[in-house]
Each structure stands twice: as C-alpha cells, then as structure tokens.
Length: 191
Image 1 (cartoon, one colour):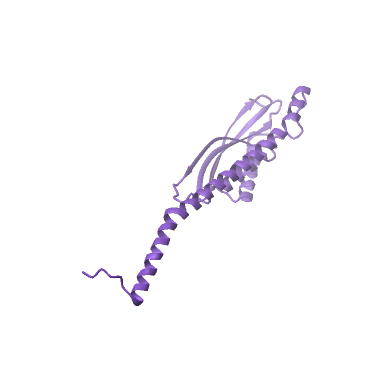
Image 2 (cartoon, helix red, strand yellow):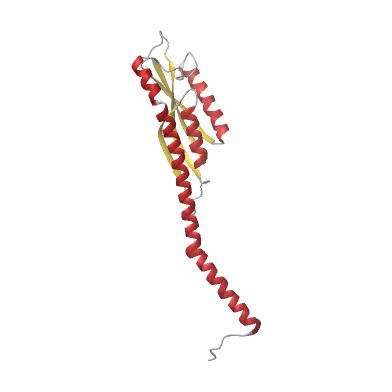
C-alpha cells in the first residue's frame, strides 16, 4: 500500500478540501455558538433596559401619587371609558384595542367581551383577547395598552411559542390575555 500524499492538481484539491473542512468545523464548533450566545445576551440586555426605563417612569410618578393620596385629590390623568352603558363602553374599548393592534402590527385572532362587574363607583369592563405576533411586537402592544388613555390593565396573560432552534426574535408568539378598563357607574344603574 502506497502511503505518499498525492501531488499536483489532485494534491492541491485534497489540501483545499481538508482546509475547508477544518474551517467549517471550527465555525460550527466555536464561532457559531459564540455568536448565538452574544445575540441572546444582547437581546436580554435590551429587554432589561426597556424594563429599567419602564420602572423609572413608574417610580417618577410616585411622589405625585403620594401627594394626591394624602390630599385626597384624584389625579387628573385618570380617565375612564366613555359610554352610558356597559355595552357602549365595551364597544369603545374594542375600537381602542383594534386601533392599537393596527398601530402595533399585531394580528388579533379573537376578542370577547366579558361580563361587566361593579367596582365601587366604577364598572369594570373586560375583553378577552387572543393574538399572534412576534415577541417585540406583542410587548409593544401590551405597553401601549398599559399606557393608553384610558389605561388598561393586563390580566391572565398566557403565552405559547413553537420551539425554535436559533431563538429568533421574530418567532410568532400566540398570546391570550384579558384587558380591563373602567367606566363611571351611573347613579340609577343597577350593580
């Protein structure tokens, strides 16, 4: 058996193939996992920065809210849903949610009006929403709902996603959640 290396064109092709296979092996074994790890870390850092900003904005309102609580003054920024009945308020809320969904680019699969409940001098109006969107779009929609006028509370949030090997941010998330808002209860209205 001849143990010499090939020479000429055949030898150069073999050397190029071996070099290419070593480079590919190094890429898949070292470089690709390190790049994926870097991207995951940068996504987590971006999410933490957004959370920090949101928490700082909320903390900035605390002195004003505390002052209003001590003096017994209701904040002027608190708004309620328009409408003389629960059905009209729910319709206004549905229109508002649909407009926010279009602005955020989210696909609403369904929207169900929940029975209204008395909450002191207010009536709580709820919508059960199912939607599909990539994670950043879904977060932007939920942020818009919590900061909008009137402010909506988010409850019963359930998220589902298909496992994705490369952890892409654009993987569609199937979400279902309840949005809650309030309207003023009329004096003669039954509870």
